[in-house]
Image 1 (tube, rainbow, N blue to C red):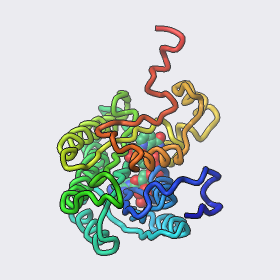
Image 2: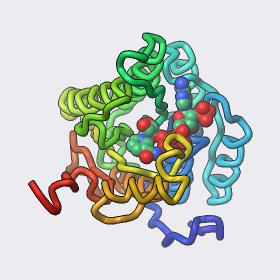
Image 3: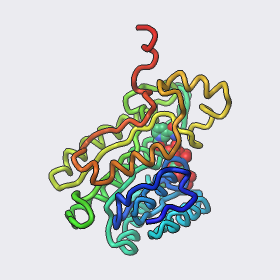
Image 4: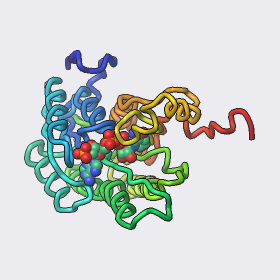
Length: 279
Ligand code: NAP
């Protein structure tokens, strides 16, 4: 497996996922984009899901194909049951099966509680939580049908839920988002408990502050970045590749005994940084 120059200067990953088939939702931007590329670099064939940005998704496909693996882009709204069933049907046709689902797609519709519309509430819950449920359900059907293929992986399938530090940190002005990620925590743990006996591993990655379009206003001026850094003991804003690498290892057999866990990739944001000098 070669590592083209566009690998962002990161060390060449071992082909940890050689021969595996992966699907990443929201893979045309930010964390999902970096994750789809990392999985391809690790040897997986990858479905690049997107909802609006077709051109960006096709760019991701080209990058993944440059690693000598297969990839295609598929437009589907993760909150639409018919579109998700259709996306998995196409993946079965083209790749034959699925080994790794990264349920990553997500968005924010921020407002103070008293200004938040029910549409803003539903949109965020539908995409961030129902979208993960639908994708996990369809992936699990195939994992259960196929079972373990020892030459491919020790596990019958892996689901990585993209959560957030806000699955445990309350967030004023973002009640829809925090509730959706709190829901992802219990979705992930319940699925891990339900599917574990079938050899399926379900886990989550919980990013802290990562430099992507979803949170641009939190880091795109020096003043905003300084404020943000106060919340991060490690004193740097994360890059999408920090999350992509964590997902790749978590989905691989190196982590085969990790079940129902959340891997916080947050520079220490969940360490109550306000207590570093007081309390
Ligand atoms: P991003 O750059 O805005 O990417 C969001 C992705 O989700 C885009 O690819 C978008 O596709 C896709 N998406 C949105 N609605 C969708 C839908 N209905 N169906 C399918 N795809 C949809 O944001 P990001 O930071 O990479 O976020 C990715 C995940 O990480 C989210 O779950 C987010 O909550 C989580 N996260 C991010 C941070 C952070 O600091 N950035 C921290 C914690 C957790 P289109 O571009 O086509 O709309």
